[in-house]
Length: 177
Image 1: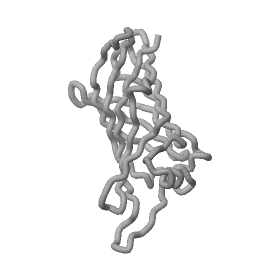
Image 2: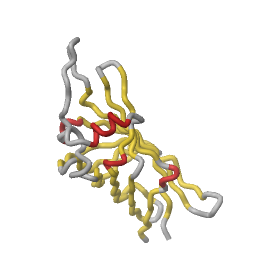
Image 3: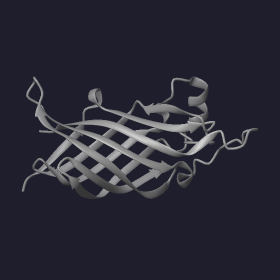
Image 4: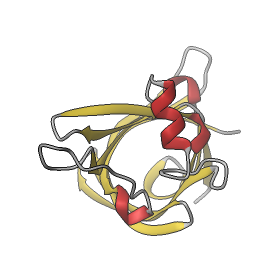
């Protein structure tokens, strides 16, 4: 079967994350610069090879001071480690449009296996004749597993920043010619 290359449609994609702050609320952030390349057999995503990267310096939580801290060596160390990378190694179909994508996530040169839940929205043609595919991607990681260990104790007990990081992404891919 013929292989198909898919590229990210950045105008219709977003990568967001949430982490607990003071154990009482979530802080939401996103990456504004990221890319993905996917290779499939025809239009079949069940055996896709997925490569994704995010620019750590594009991290945005709508608070300049917090963003600076997150980009510092305390967290992502964006100057030394400019990219977060994910590479898939298997895809398991859970239901008609639900999949589990397993792969390796690398943050700060630490690579760990992760599993992401993916909902396949379908394939369609836009008004300009381009073939697009849509996905919702969700998962959780422990930030400490990747060397993102900075924290501060609260007077009331507990820690300032939660360990669990929730990932939510809306991805649209465009078939490449």
